[in-house]
Image (cartoon, rainbow over all chains, first blue to last red; front, side, top):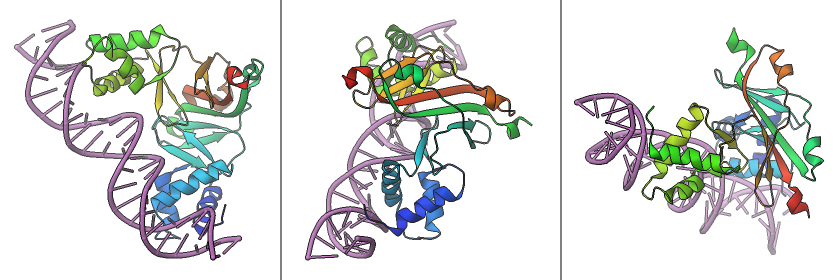
Length: 120
Length: 120
DNA sequence: ATATGTGCAAACTGTTTGCACACGA
DNA sequence: TCGTGTGCAAACAGTTTGCACATAT
């Protein structure tokens, strides 16, 4: 795989902020630096970055995929008021499943509810 | 909310088998009994059944939503070989998150990997 | 030099919606 | 009866892809 400024910039953006963005948000952000980048290129590079394990994706109820440059396994919390996504480094156990002969390669946990800011 | 044969049939189908179907699979199955049902009606009723809590949805990496008539909270395992979805009634803890003042209303855990049948 | 990546636009897929008609209460 | 639900088709949103050109190695 060849290095390109497009992919570098996408990865840099996703690593810079501990937040979660969908493809269009990433496109808008990266366009500031690379004005003529196309959305197709963003999608292609997000796919590659997931393949290489540099980023992870978060599928939520709103059926658009969010991308996360923080790749240590962690759970997400989606607030139904402000739509913010929070990270939680919660211990997760796949031991029970693996004990049955399943090979667990990956796991996603998403909590839905109201965050502590919106509760106030 | 009014009772309709369409919604009854959809719910009956989803409860009959302990499995997970997407909207088109449900459409195809229900069409055997109600040949002129439309896909739009299937979607509308799936939305209503989720609102009433009669079914739950499972969002997976393949970005199409699966519906599940088994509503006791449970985790899912998606096999990347056979694409089957398995249920696991695993204890999940949202206590750590709630301790921070978050209100957890719902949680989804999806494991990805290879199931015990495909490993053989 | 050449294989891989890009920009663009069109195509695709899953889902939603507007409308006129049908039907459950 | 009358308001909610339906079938149909068109619209929509997010994503993917074919193509000719560009660029990293």
